Length: 351
Image (cartoon, rainbow, N blue to C red; front, side, top):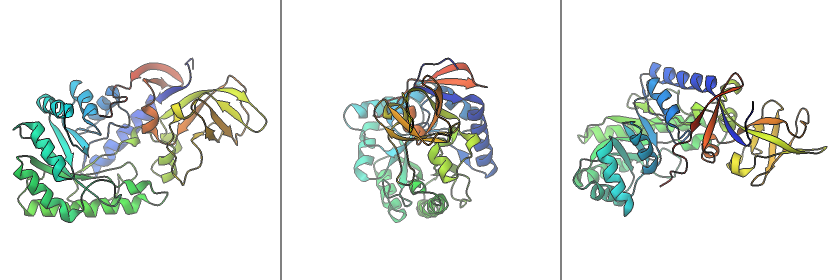
């Protein structure tokens, strides 16, 4: 494979298999699929997801929404407590004119800023519910007061969403987090419907919790990392090794008796490392771990063999989402040959 390293390498057959498998699993459960595009930030991958039946896309920021809206994608959920002030308010108003977008809210101030930015338009909002991660979102008992505040501001409350991020607490965590998601959304749905809100969706989601049994009130799933999978997903039991579609190609630049060094450090592999996972990446072909990294150096030990200087190895990153955001393009491969290059269109769109 003739590519310059470090490079973001995508196995097209594995990607398509991951997309199809998730679409089938979610559809067989009677749910909609709204995949989180912050993982791939790529128009071509989003099109594959929609072609496989996704009802829409999830994004994390207004700028991500702008990228996908300009490319013709509709039914976008910004799964984040949006607080549009200043120039961001003007951008939100233009976005509302461009496509159908639902904005996450979890506090009265944010809701008021959305209403002001919308300038009389019937902006759609969804209440974020804290199902146990304790990051953002309101507890289920507080969903109704916030929803009523939104309605008083002229906002259209169309549903609620949650993210069971505590599914990433370590192996064995996804099951409990999935149950927490379901319980929280079921209570939120009951409170909203009893108060007369027309609930369009109740959205759960993370790759580790998707595919578990859900209460009937849950209508859709929002996994993201499943398109590629990564070392965390493998350790959590959310995928098998054959499902790993993304790797960082790196060249061995230095070799020693007890280690070798590649040209991929934190500026290629990113720095995410949960406490329960040692190292910064894994090389399946050598069953070796990147044990230490600098900005441009990755130090590898424990290899089944020591590769010579100049050999290219493929590293599975700990967290695909953050690694993707470090590259301008995917090198798309099939059967070990480069077949295309896809732009990371929403790279760096964090505002």
